[in-house]
Image (cartoon, rainbow, N blue to C red; front, side, top):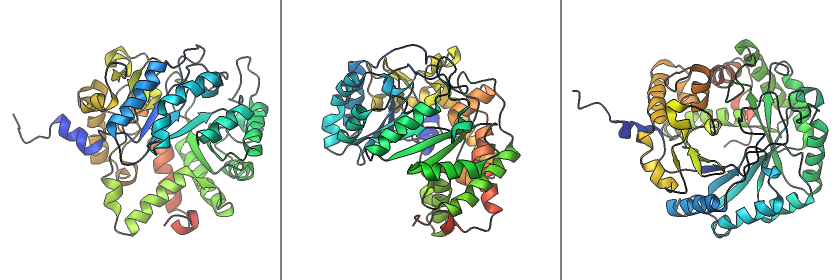
Length: 387
């Protein structure tokens, strides 16, 4: 027996934090849209987050007592499908923490239900708002309601309400095989939309979205080259992925690369309406996977988040993920920047967390780096605000 081999506990502590910077809460399982690429299995059912669950989540944040505020993200199904009066009541559990600077709220929404009352709530509780929209009208063919009707007009109406109330918002854009060929058009649209930042999620196999065609990696590289070129024309529009690459390059240039390479993965505890908890990938929540007990690492009604994280190295899929991360470090030339594919991508593409390369690796990490390396634009031109 090799007693010198690192234990699972040691390997976990080298790669994953026992504390959390972000908590994702599911205010309701229901979504009023039925997007073609949606990964959520229960989006047609209305389950609302229990008052005891938000109180337990708030108590867990208080117990952790982190030096920096914890981001509480209200996400999936559609958060604004929860009646606004109920949403306000659930927020009260966090109010002392928010006033004390220990919690910051954010919401990811399809914007179709936003009205003046929601804007008042966002302003009162200082929400950071993210909107899901895939570009101009022709790019939103997959974003439809339950009757198959396009949602674009309703999304734009909600964005208009945000702008009228001067509520800043970022955007997440799902880039599908239908839109991968027009990076310049997407960038021009978002530059004119008034968002503070755009993040491009190149479509992947996740959750119940398990049969659509994947984007070709060569097209992904061309896409990122187009985004980089367009960013030079629209420097005020921040792009999440370019910001990440610029941050890495800046640290490497200034002798601070270890700050990046030694940073631990946030466990991203994601809490369902009933208190069940998934770790490392929000897309795992609610997935039927008997071999991993449905990816339920615990329940906040019976254990606090710090307690669950203290024993997280015993969770079966986390143990597999540690093997996968080891494999990435040993075999991938992009490891220094990427530091390992998202947990959910490994499982949904390969059926195991020990897998290494995924479509996310190829299309969002490797293709981005390769496209950047082929350009003559300096890192400073890509993100002049990065210091």
